[in-house]
Image 1 (cartoon, rainbow, N blue to C red):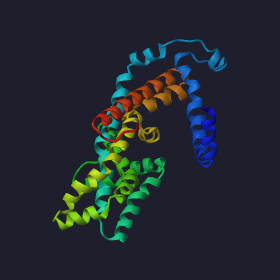
Image 2 (image 1 turned 90 degrees about the vertical axis):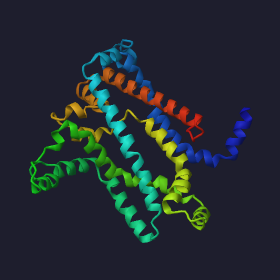
Image 3 (image 1 turned 135 degrees about the vertical axis):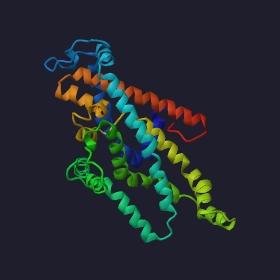
Image 4 (image 1 turned 90 degrees about the horizontal axis):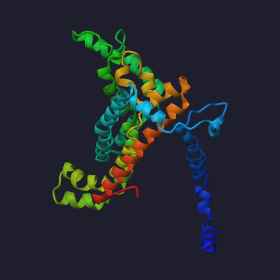
Length: 302
């Protein structure tokens, strides 16, 4: 058996060399660091190291579950991700379907360029733009509100506005970039199907519904599963940059809480336990949704 494996490797060594850098990256930066996960079950002391630190079992997990901030961070994390999944996830699909129907190639390229460009703007710059546009004194939005007879409003200091600002600014930044995969899937649709549909008198909307949408559905399902696999992960940088003491009730998520307790508070074992809890929830959700998609005869990861 070993000789058979050796022969296959020797025969296809170019392919193994091709994937070697990627495998090395994942092994070195994703699997080897898993050794440090054990500090979630220890009282980690830097001068004793990981192996020398005493075991504490599930004490750090119990501490997190009993913390008064547990309900706040879980609630905010779930609401922000659910908001993104319901609002932000379908928009690239719709945008790709609409761009695909544009007949003029030059105009299509213009739309793609305009929608792609915000993706390359730094998150720090995006946060700065939000503060400028939503400033209660000089912000464009508040100037328009005052122009129409309203009162200026400090949006970024209002907990009720935080999630909406976070999600819709993310849509503006990433929706165009996310359409690339769907446009690539639509490029594989046979033109003969559309020609036959036009001959039968189908409208553009009917062609989108019965040809384009079913064709990209496997891609949609795969990306949906991958999104569910990161359901408990909220972009730390943007949340932290938009966060302030006035909107903390709506902006404190697991990632910012781990940063404050782990790096700023030097509670390494406690923050590792929270991170492991977060990863386990994502793992369970990924397995569940993948199995459900497979049972529904849709595409799945495995």
